[in-house]
View (cartoon, rainbow, N blue to C red):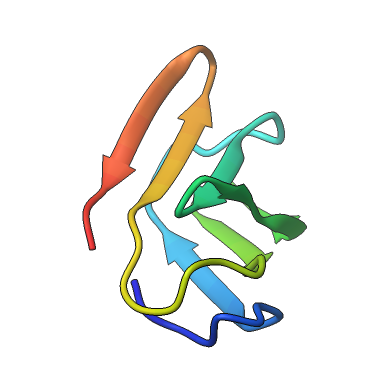
Length: 68
């Protein structure tokens, strides 16, 4: 994903079976949780290295990496 290096962008990630305990990192920096439903997470991006970064989602002990 790409966005401003200073962070603060609001993004939406869609899928299925989401739970309240998931965490997300952007280029290794933790995102700020805004809200979630069973199929949508809304997050604020953290400050991170400029350019495209991988997004990592951890939920119920499982990790998924979304490559840039």
